[in-house]
Length: 186
Image 1 (tube, rainbow, N blue to C red):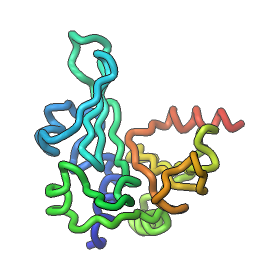
Image 2 (spheres, rainbow, N blue to C red):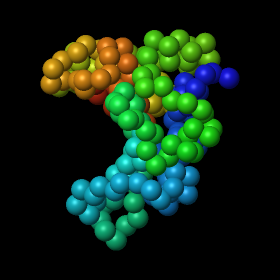
Image 3 (cartoon, rainbow, N blue to C red):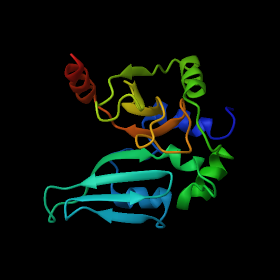
């Protein structure tokens, strides 16, 4: 077995799920798996985020009469680099399954282990607002994007993660979004 938290990150990148939860799962389904201890943020009546510490799930809906529709999830990996770090409310669940989580996730190591499994990560253009501070890598089959600290910027990147650390992991990033990014670069 891959040591510690690397197995968790590899599972997420390979499957496009968090503990089997898809980005499109309902708030009730996410609560069944991750628990009811979360911070909830609503952006009007049509967008909602539930923050479980390391993991955030996002939903939207066309009107208040309609049910929530899963939009995406993000693993905020950079949060683990801070003193007193925890995995948040899901810590017990994640540690029971995957063991200890390290404060940093080195992209090179993750990429190397994924390549051994036949799961490539392709670099795609970064949005101009984030370049050169971040680099984005995409897994086409699972539609997962991995954001990596590309260079340090006083106001452009968090202080504790280092260049080459994974900042976040997000799903889904569709092929259409990747093509849109590529078309903007020229």
